[in-house]
Image (cartoon, rainbow, N blue to C red; front, side, top):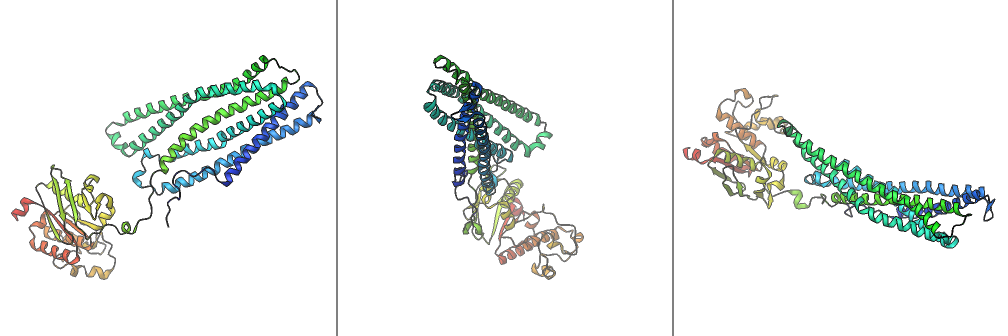
Length: 512
């Protein structure tokens, strides 16, 4: 069964349920505006001393409009929060499913796979959906309802309304570029801090020991100061947009006064309605800020979702490379500067004759998956580089015979040849001495008596054969002069179909 998401990228915001919730937000926005208009009209009638409004008692109108306006506001807030949390829940689960299938090499700080950054991004998305989207939806409903009411009932308010919208639109257009720039740059600088920490943490001890931690902390301090400065810029532009929203109220009053259509009976109504409009415009300005922060957060999250996840292994991948094919070494760079190219035949004995001990050691480590990735790329098996095969797969299939490999000194009533292996059966241990004729020394059960170099070599070879690897790499000077042991090893490897690679120095082989 595949765990790959059906659709790559962020989950879609809109579905049937969230569409209904958004429609509910719009309707409550209309209700809230109508309640505010009725509340303003009732308050104006109360201040003017009129006993009723359109035939209804003033107190009844005030109470009913207050309940409608305040109730719609509470229901809007609750609906917006549920809308936002529903989507954030989907994003969080999709993020978790995707990240669990991302290859380990992709989990670098630059990719943004950080729980801290995830919290920041989801926080920005939630603020937009719960507050920003609500503010803009409510503002749109307010403007539509208010404009319709003004055209139908109070045409004298059209000039102040146009003045409000003109001042707010021009001010927002001027302030938005600076706000957008500060939001994006501050988010980028915070990402730089996360990348710097991600790169430094694995190397913090060497940096500390060599006295190089102070420059890193200095760089971190400068980046943090840049973030603080950019956040101050963001607050400045945000405050400018809100201040412009508040300026729309005196602008509307000025336009109303200059229009010459002032009515003393409706002045209170005018002031209350346009004060409400200024508040809605200020909330809408905050919504635009949340919208821009949401765009940046979604861009960061999309970088993670665009990373190709792992999928089920194909049949060929599950089997791994075919160890019955030749191992090709092409252009392997040696410590001496030379390049090594050779084909190692499967189930056969191959000699690698080198000039320098460091070259011999490097080739042995490279074949056994113990060298750097660059060296692993130069060795291929079945159209796969050793770097792609992976170290664990190499260690399961390749065994190194070298004097560097120590022999366990503890016994636990088991022959030393089986120590470190997975052999558990007592009958298998009893057959060890007969399985490798001429190799396993008679005194293997007591390692303290294995003192001669010949017995040490024989024991290392027997332990290697016991693992039943696909390839045995031998880097052992003591084996060169032991022709009988060498012949026995070749015979045992051939009988098992094991590829044998003997790495030796040219002058030692010539001397032998």
